[in-house]
Amino acid sequence: MYDRHTLGGSIWRHALILLLCAFSIFPVLWIASASFNATNNMGLQTLIPRHPTFAHYKELFTSDRYQFSMWLLNSLKITIIAATLTVMLAALGAYAFSRFRFKGRRAGLLGLLLIQMFPQVGAIVAIFLLVLSLGNIFPWAGLNTHTALIFVYLGGAMGFNTWLMKGYFDTIPRSLEESAKVDGATPFQAFFWIILPLARPILATIFVLSFISAYSELIIAQILLRSGTKFTLPVGMALLVSDQWSQRWGMFAAGALIAMIPFLIVFILAQRSLVSGLTRGSVKE
Image (tube, rainbow, N blue to C red):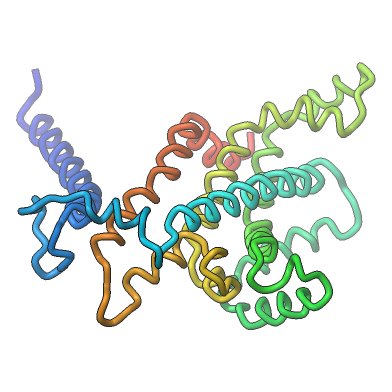
């Protein structure tokens, strides 16, 4: 039996949870409604479309002006490559900072932390000039190339991810590696076969964070990419609502819903590892 105070507290908690759920779900429902709204007018938008249609989805994939499929493939390619390389490089750097003692180790850690204090967008002019100069030497890594964009994403993500992964590596007992070395394993073999399997939660966490950051980034991609066939999804979708007299909100909403699918897939696949990956590295055992 619940007393009156306990029952009242439970009702308030459940009411607050329902309110937060409604607050989170409502924007998604509104976007879904806009994607099926035939009027293409946000001023006449209602939660339940009066004349629902799939025309916006059809036009999104068949329009000669907008290359949505190409934008989506470009974003997935850039995001997956950037996230995978971020995990690999951050794991190597974090393992070195966690396990080895060398001259400049403390200065390197502080340097990574200080770099993260400055947003990547604040260096956009320097990034543009650097990529422009790099393109004169290596055309495949200059302006309007996906390679340049991947390099920029890697540089912006390494500091925070290395710190986060180092904290997780510190919680793994050194005795496991020492036992492997006694059995004849090299330091790299101990790292690859012992540490990385145990660090799977933080690897998944870094991959998801890098995926989200690169997949939804707009400003840098908009500056470095120039042609429609090279656009990422955020840059391409900005064209749908950038024209003053031809704002296609229905197509934009339909594209936004489709763009959510990779997010959902990544989160579903990595959900078991996300919580432990984010929390375990914050407390040293």
